[in-house]
Image (tube, rainbow, N blue to C red; front, side, top):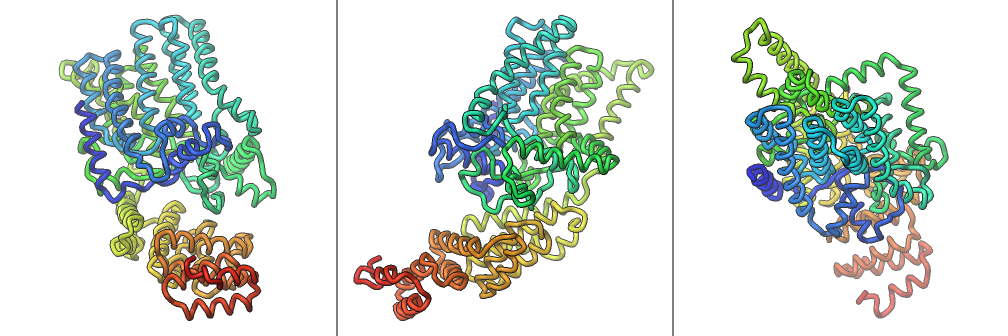
Length: 639
């Protein structure tokens, strides 16, 4: 109850924060995907690039385009509080009850758990299911596996793999749990049953993919692309964007299944073929293998770095940063004690203390099963969050071992235990991540600036964004060394450009976007937006040259300008709408949509002489006489 009260209080602070209401990347994809399911039917059309479990559960809440996502966050807070209890229950199997309570207290104050409970991501649900799974495994060790143990374990593994396929690795602790009491033959039997149940859970997804013509996809087809992100030529060990692989435009239909981010559009541009989902995954795997084969030493160094970084005290953020949220909203957990820097040290020491017990072997197998995908792919806070689960359970035995040191003679056990604790501290507290403070400062200004812009406060938004792109701060960031940092700065400049355009200053916006393109020339969306602003400032030839770099036509530019005008009209931003419409007419003077909407816009503002002059120009441009007659008739004013 204390944990739940704290999480709900943190939710209250989030709702009062400027950051509430902004969903990005996977969070936006999940929420939009759930809306598409409610609107268009639960079967859907796209293959699953992202795991379907979470968005399908979100769809039960029947979200709409204007719905708030507070309800799922409340449910996740309840699940998070229940997980705290489950962690204590699991720890009771490997230590005395009073120390198990301490592990629960540490879990209740673990800031990352609360952060994930307040994120529209599957981590909160998966953490709860993982805690249930771990309790079952440890109970099987202490009391012996029951008849339904392997089947229930397999069902849980299958359900979790529908959110992230790598959870199939949890078959390993299932085998370890049975091996301690029933030997190798019993372990193999349990493995077979658990595997069959796990695969059985995924069979409906396989049938759906086959029925829709997407091929043999048991859960998702993200293996190859994720392998390339984590091991490609630009990989750094953490999540690294591939800007040239992004689609030119995100759509609600494309977000169903996460298909907008699967990289197939990039393959189409590069190879000239539209591959099937499974073929695209194989294509990315082939590129990954080519990179590793050409540079084997680099590949090994990268694997080693990811292995160490996955246990580091710094949280490598992928979507939102917990440090940013805590700077803006206040603490999300216990000061210092609620960070991975403490949980990691205690957990590793606890695993060492349990090295001779069957329960310790289960915890170690669970930890390796969720740690291994980080090494194979990439390290992020949301994926490393699942490593913290067995470490929090192991913190109970760590507290017990530390308490027992006061009665242990130094020669018998105190020195080895202190050496193990020191080694865990060194592993977790290695200074691997540089520029962390500067990057958090930049991200705070960027997040606040973009949040204010979404709420229509352009003065505050521009002030924050100008601070984060100020030379005094940019000079402290590793712009040359890190493409991810360059992409982040380019994103801030792009947001600043949007604000300038919104206030009727496309020339300022073009300058900001020009700087963004110089930082991230591979980003197709930046170049596309830059072309649009060049057109809005009367430089249509430069805009077309920018499009040639993308291999795009004037039609794309015209559609972008019309879409910009439509959005501006929706927001009642008449100046921005007029600029976009006039630019569209410069690109294609015969565009019926651009001419007619501009004409009606002028009339709605009482600018009759300009409207009449526009009608005359429409005749000269060759706009359809029927359209001109309709817009010049007696009902035109009312329209």
